[in-house]
Image 1 (cartoon, rainbow, N blue to C red):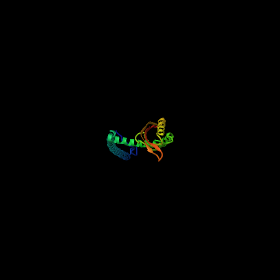
Image 2: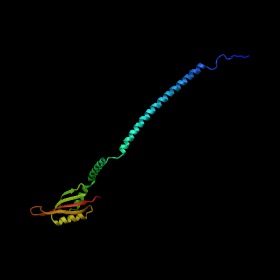
Image 3: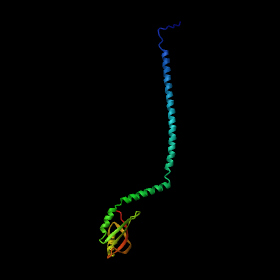
Image 4: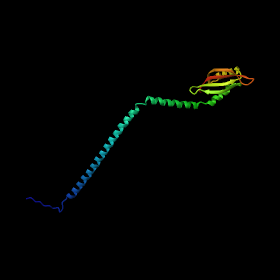
Length: 179
């Protein structure tokens, strides 16, 4: 004999609640899967875009890193040399040079022109002296000074300074020493 007796008044497993919970869990998991797939698709699109940008930047870098064309480089060097020449001209202390010239010019010599050469460090002096002896003393003092070298008398000639006075006009070239 087989007895089938149910002593419990209720079913212990609430199948309706289990189905609702399972359905809700599956829906949440499907929603999370949808979000992950959407995120992966967005990231793959961004990766593709960044890869294209990287390749274009590498192409630009290769074009730039190939060097500056020789024509542009030469033009740039010319501009640099021009700027350096201006800086050198402004840096030279011409007042100091004129002060030193004043110290070596003897009485009886008048310098009428001081013409510096913009390319080199040469200097052309023009003037008038009372006698050739005064001019010789002036040249000796210039040669003895430590700021001028290569002193050359390029021209000299007699001139009339006034009605009763004769003089000597002269042109001297020399090289200025930078210190």
